[in-house]
Length: 387
Image 1 (tube, rainbow, N blue to C red):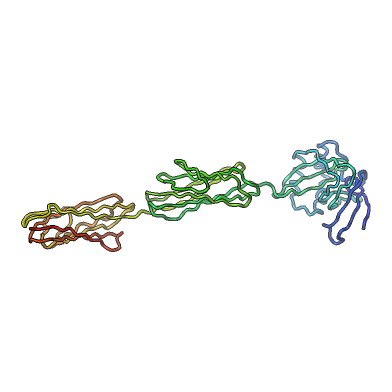
Image 2: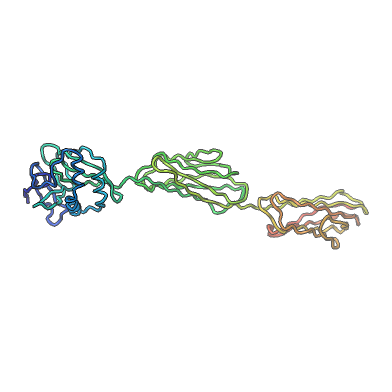
């Protein structure tokens, strides 16, 4: 069915009903200018004329009615404010262009005509301005001859945003390698170009490897991230070696051309391991019956963590008899050295025991070391010849 009636912009419109039951399926064909009865407002000659339309309190309900008929989901306050303040530019509606809708009037009442194709012989001269509302971008176009308008949806408002996560094991052993990873997420809707992720290095950390061309300096590792697509992630990692026990705090940042600094942090506990060394010696050896020899006992914590309740018990060989001990107690041939409540990393304790040769033979003195770190005590022997 084809019907001619006066339409927006003073246009003569051909109306083709593609589906009678669907307003969205309407299609209008505009061919002529020149019907002032259907124009939205008077002809415009300068950008301020358009601003005057938005200042006109009588027109605001008509703007709202047209947009409501179109089903616009934006905020009218954004629309009005943009019409009053945003930059207005010259615009052309080319022949053959189909507009999402065009405002018009019918018996003076505002009306929204959908899918209007300009089929005239010349482009329509218009004014246009851009605005955003509720996260969407729009362009409002208003033909000069009639002040009718339409609004184009240009898609989501450009949003630049980055997020970062730092991940590291909760606990590692001192001296072992540690992997720490940074995950950068483009949470915006535009490509982020030339992003840079940086991991600050605590003191005493040695970098052994990096992924993705990480650049190592004395105090940081930096990764260039040339292009991050919207809603994409990029993970970069580095391998580190730790020495000293304690808590390591890692601070990281990411920035790009569009996003200011974003911070993230994570931490790990570097646990030490006690490692007990037992050393013993006798001097002199051999020793004659009736003469003395001195046993020296040294216990060293070679590890990276405290050990506690460290103790050595010495069973002197039957060929000898203990006489004195620098510390500890002597009961028969057993010398019980004192308990060390805490032996710090790299710390050592040394004891001496003087024993007298009693019986000729190859005497074997046994040293037994125990501590909280040792699941079972460790033993060692020292052979002393008595003649």
